[in-house]
Image 1: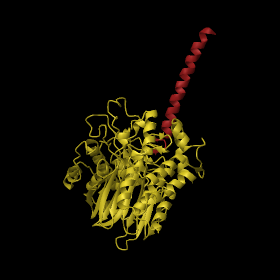
Image 2: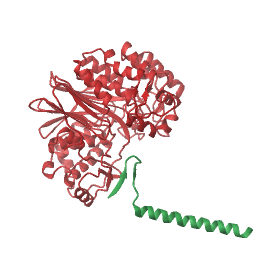
Image 3: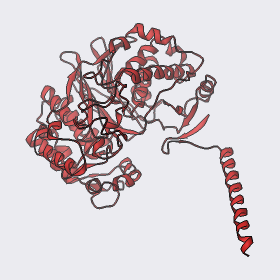
Image 4: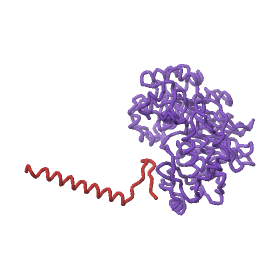
Length: 520
Length: 44
């Protein structure tokens, strides 16, 4: 039994955090577009209708499955720190809001690379739904209204942002039409002049001009090198499946390490939501996060020993530190309350895109560049100012990144595509979903709806739908159990599974957000 | 086991904790009232 039905389709499926974005993606697929055509249209629309989650001034990470070659590829479109961003400049700390907390935006460069390699439609055509929603308006959703109301104080501190996002000065109510003419101008400019205009053209000029007047660090030189690049995914085997995860500077390795650790236990016989299964997942999380703090940084600046971290031998050694009956005291710094959006698409040919885009915190740095409608990220706050950290701030360096999207294959066949927003909770949610799908045999919607936990220095935060017997046992093992509301875990998971025989697509979407899956 | 409010980002206090906090506040209020009374008396 699930709260929502599983979407089952054969010709294509889409799962996003917002129903209007899902509709746009489905329409592209039905009109004959492929997975990347749909993904680009969805990605652009999300920046208009969920500006607090992701924007043109943010980053993206994508994993694609190419059905023709049966290969996977990772796209890293996270931007580096501007050249003027030295540790000395930020000796008093990196500000959480304002243009100085923004790294070079990567999302539009991701569009360029994806379009160049896979698209079958012109970018100008794929951006039309987003342009229409920006220029002619879209009706604010309930979550949209709630998020704006919760951040009114923040938005009012940035007059240009307030003017761009709340043009009539009245917070959006559900159903109120919202237009963003300047964002419409920027999207139209990308559609007509091409995505490089964002980095080297009129759009770049406006961004740099804004920085000059508002204390931002971006120069023409910073923007002139679009940051997106194709990389090889991390790959680990898990119970007959291959996980394809984001390589550094993403923290996708944590997901891979957690699965490596868990593979040594028979979770299935312990049972879904049993205290033992949850305990092992939480202990695996603690160990993997400890490695992140010790090793993860921009591989162009520091050596990340990924071969060792992902080896089965290393997992075997680390597993010795897990006590089946006792929670480890050691915990690592956690981060929550971050906003991001994740979506996935599978087309009729079996190609898939696992796509995550973000501006980090809700509304990112909270600053819109004048005349562009572009809201910028505050990803600079991900850097450490400790010079001994592998993630220490350096000009031109990328910060360790919470964003990660994954997919799983069985042999060379696509099996699952999934992901979620949630800062450090992302990899924790992803692990639970993969265990739900593979170990506990749940369908995608069951896997998404099952109660989840998230662990941080405050304790083990866990939805109170978990059986009370398990909660009591977890306490007896030494976990500090903090009960979340029934649907209070911070993920917003989207998953599409491919049936191994019929190749039908089974899509699930998280009721914890406005998520919506559809297919045809 | 405690209740956690993710929207506020805090552990929800128990009834006993709230009662303790109320008792502490009441004691502080009484002490302040007494101090105020003492300050008033010499001039009256």
